[in-house]
Image (tube, rainbow, N blue to C red; front, side):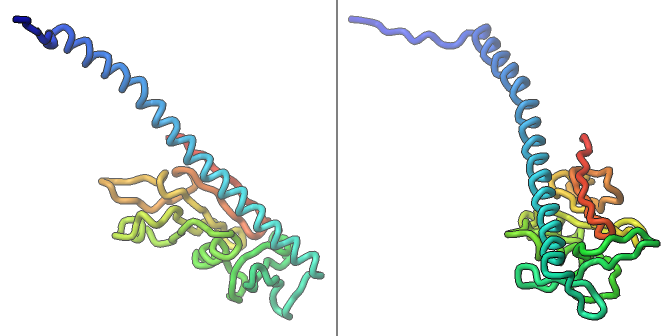
Length: 201
C-alpha cells in the first residue's frame, strides 16, 4: 500500500510568506496613493481648462456679435442662456465681456452666480454645491465640487474645490476658508482670470 504525505507549512515558511506580503503591501500603498493624487490633479486640471475655454468662448462670442448690450448690461446668448457679462470699469480695473451672472443683479458677483456660471458654461458639468451641508448629507456622493465666494468688491472671485481634496474633521467636510486648501481653481470675472492651485497634502 502506498502512503501519500502532505507537507504542511512550517513556522519558518509562514513567517517568510507573511514578510513577503508585508513587503509587497508597503511597496504598493505609496504607489496607489500617488496614483490617486495624480488622478485628482488631472481631474482639476481638465475641469479648470474646460472652464477657462468656456469663459473665453463666451467673451469671443460677445465680441463677434458686436458686443450686445441691453441698455444696462453686456450680455450674450450662450448655449441658450443669457449670460450677463462684466462692463468695463477702468478705475477699478474691470475688463468687459466676462460672465458674471445669469440674471441681472447689479453686477455684484454672488456665490449663486458662481454656481449659475458653472452650470451654464460647461458641457455636462460635474455636480457642484455652495452648501457644505450637501457634502455631509445623504446625497453627498453625487457632488464632485464645492464652490465659495472670496475676495472684496470689485475683485470677488469664485473658488471651485475638488470635493475629495477638502479637509475633513471626524469624517465631516469643513468649509474651506481660502485657496490654500485642497485642489482648486479660481475664477475672477473682473479680469477674466482662471487660475489653478495645487496644494500638497
